[in-house]
Image (tube, rainbow, N blue to C red; front, side, top):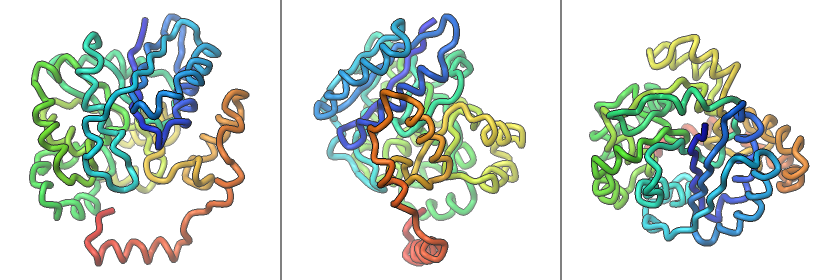
Length: 312
């Protein structure tokens, strides 16, 4: 069996793809399961093809790798929160991969830890996506975001707004619904969560929901997951599984290769340092020195955001 999986990136975050792909093959391969790995990137990032080939061949010669450099049609789209427009490349997959009808999309700031068969075998007939509900659904964040002019288009998905860092995508359904036309329109708007907002706005009613263990947001604490339970978004067992047995750790927010002390960042570094072909690719000494803000600094920053109506 082959699982289709795709990563989209530009030259601003390219080296990290080696870690993502390596962990995919080291942690999720089982007997008879291999991958068709697609890397859709800007032309400036195609230099990663050779090192990625070495990563794949060292782990599974039955899995395939395709690196495709493309022009980013959304390169002039809105950039915010330090997230580059390379993330918008996923909105082009239905055209760039015309022979692929279904695939798993994952951001390159994830670390795979367990099998993806449970995701891959989900029936998406009549659905566009399958993904995990995100932290935006929690009351404090939803309230802060509700002041955004475009947020009225998301009122119907309160409690079901997805984090799009890991998504199972039905490309055939995307083509059938001609969603590209809507995506092109929304890409011209200033959306705080960029293409993630676009997917949540345009795919309402056509999204299936995954267990949070398939997109364990590293920055979230156990108390954050308790809030999910109180809001009825996840069950207590689902949150326990996400905390204790995450299949995919997603380093949204601060990155472990920049700051060693991010929550669960040590797992990323432990894995990198355990692999001969990854060890030394990143500056661990710099990451260890680059500590995050103090508690006082975090409180002051949050107050400033609340007063200034800057959304978290």
